[in-house]
Length: 539
Image 1: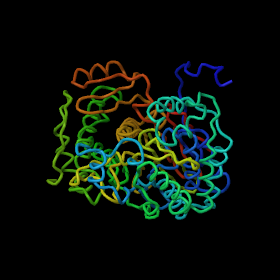
Image 2: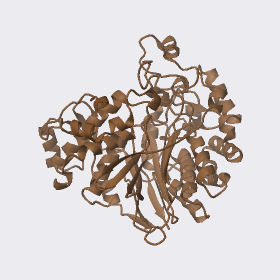
Image 3: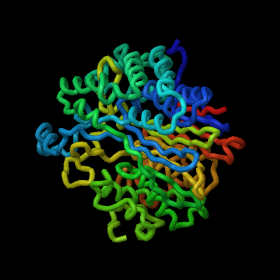
Image 4: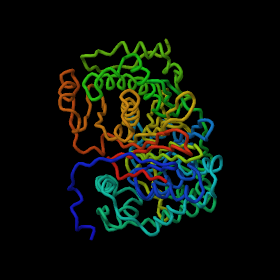
């Protein structure tokens, strides 16, 4: 019956905000409901986030899996905590390793295969979050994901589109076709997909609290598979992995404070862009008008120019995060903006001055901002047979320049695109949110936050609103729903634009939870992006 309907036909629809004292918002309804099950069982927002994250590895494997990385910012009821669970390079990885293998002219590790895989951190993040902040037994949190993996689920519309697009690119990667082409092709919309091998791994992870993944049966299977396909990752690399608790960076904007995970991630670019915009009276401009959109684009371009030059593993950077966020430095960058002309900016000198996002909140006041990703869709394309371990390809984000902040090295973490965000006011929590999608993420953080803080749009409206995406140079993409006069005005200022009608690939997708007041009384309001198959659920 999955072929009975035309799944592409439809009419424009509007999503409405969701209200409740306990909320989970994700890009797949089954994952949101998995989190809600934990809350109804007496768990807290951390338990809900972990259950949702585990389920997402099954229901949206086009974006994340058991071989993913993750980051988290959470409010425990009293203060913020950050968790960096991005992967580290195998000990064998050096510039020489790749140049010898792929040629002296190689600039980066490969896009696919085992030589693009760093040690995945997502499973370690689940364990770390559960041990420090969870209420329920860890094994309980994986029950929904195990059940869905074993029984299967009907393929949703947006996930199927990305799945079908990935098959020609990945069908020759080891283990991919066996795992993700059960009928010799991508599943159709509405067709059942089971992932029993991933259920096996989830059970081992649940029983061992992750030990099987980082030193036991799963690690051994992954290392053996890597060896047989020319990879360098070892059981010792898995065993050495630990996620890192960090202090989030912060930047004030419009009477609020935005928090992001510090480098090796790109979250600092959203803070820099907002710091640049603080030098303008954005709220006096029309929300969807050309002046407001042009300023935001130019501020984001300035931030990207710096982070692509300076940001990598924090210990390898020649400048500090504080220098990049310095108010005087950002004011000097703001002066470079021409209100009537688009520009291609270079980096400044601050020394002088495929992803899923989910969020959960409970009535105790705990709020969790969590992101988990393979990188490029299915990631490396590698799937460890018998275990359903779909591996990320974050290693491709390294370069082979030993002097670079993002140069590859043993045990090093690459520049990362995935970033959760958190908003506070006067030291108290306001919103847990994120917008997934490669370099769209800080752009989405900035655009949606400007809409909420400067223009008072509610979270769902800010989520639904048309977006732009900066690519490189003067090139941007804009969604087809953007005001035609604004599109024309941007073109007249020199922006080189492509209007995109399919929003999935280019403009990210967000989940938002905004605290309305006392969580035991007023609770929260949540939004889920219509650009994905997602849902916010509450009670």
